[in-house]
Every structure is written in C-alpha cells, then in structure tokens.
Length: 114
Image 1 (spheres, helix red, strand yellow):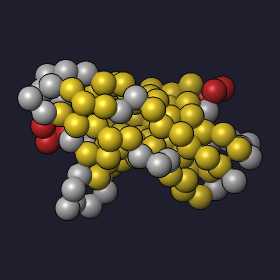
Image 2 (cartoon, one colour):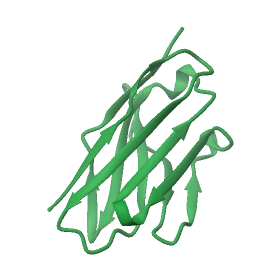
Image 3 (cartoon, rainbow, N blue to C red):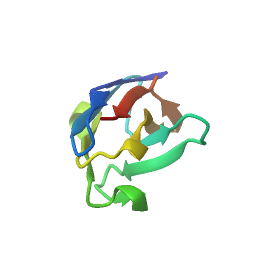
Image 4 (tube, rainbow, N blue to C red):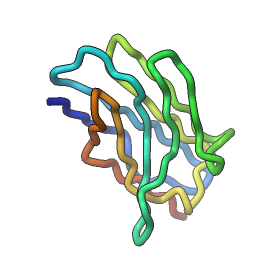
C-alpha cells in the first residue's frame, strides 16, 4: 500500500505564489510518474503537471510558464511551485503517483482571491 500526503495549500491573492509538496510512503520499490491534478467546484479533475522518474515533464497548457514541477526520486517527493496565481487556479490539488497502479493524496485546497 502507498500513502501520499500533500502539504502547502492555502489562500493567496492574485499574482501570488504557493508551493505544494507531496511525499509518498509505504511499500514502494519504484515510482514511475508523479504528478499533480486539480478539481475545481463543479468541474472534472484535470491534469496540471506530471514528471517521470527520468525527469520527463508534461504541463497542461494553462500553467506553462507559471508552474514548475520537480521531484526528488530518493525521497519519493514531488513539488509544484505555483507563481502568478489566478482566481481560476482555485481548486483542490491532488498528488498522484504511479506505483503499479495510481495512488492519490487527500487533496490540498488552493484558493486565489482578492
């Protein structure tokens, strides 16, 4: 079993920054891709960014240039640095790890509002 714990969510004004962290623990031999997804009220969950164990990164078009995903393989940790936040970035952000199958964190609320 694998557990994912997110931290770093919160409230920020438009243009502000937040950094999300996610640590995976449990029975882990290797993690393929790790990533971040988000779900806004009334909307479906959508991909934000993913990163493979080899460092290959994929970003959703709406975050390019503003968000940066990074990963420390030896610590089973993935980060999401979010800059220039907009009100439309308000959502619950979920960490995802592919360890044989997909595992999800409990979610971290990000609110962008003036």
